Length: 225
Image 1: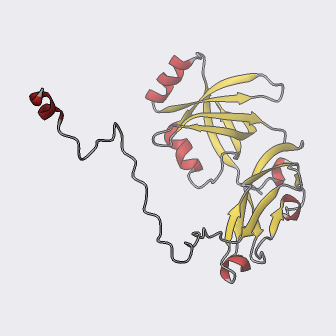
Image 2: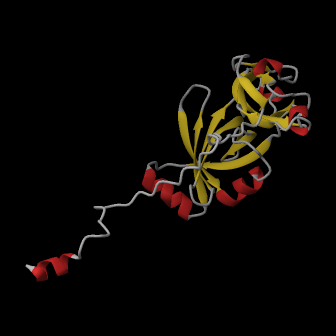
């Protein structure tokens, strides 16, 4: 089950980009909450409090208790927008949830183990899918699922259908989607030169007109006229 984190928020009366900048300058984070009836409310979070509460969370989708001006609801963080320079959160999107109704969310896939094809055959492990979409009750939601890749040999692939999910979670991502695989290292071979033939010298390309080394300098040519 995912950790439940408590978030304190206050309602915002004003909206717009100017108001969002004012909130950030005052040490807050602008946020939006989508209610169960699909209406939207704008909120303000304390930036330091939010960063400290989420510092150990690997993903953006976080199950939480959202306390708005003293009133508590269940909510999930759907997206955290971050500053492109320092990665600090600049906007948070919440969705209100009913703990008795299933929700859709994404779950991170964490590869565990060293593949046999890497350890004993010199192959390379590649992860193609990093998260999957699932459906479950909020109480069954997990932050990540471990995918054991230790048995993979060269050319072996694990698909979404092979991933073992905790009880109560239904995967929505197509089962044929490749999650991870081991492939052989491709080495580029240089074509051998023909017997008795010297390797070709590299071609040198120069800009401008090619000069004739035997030609007289332009200044001398004018002097002789």
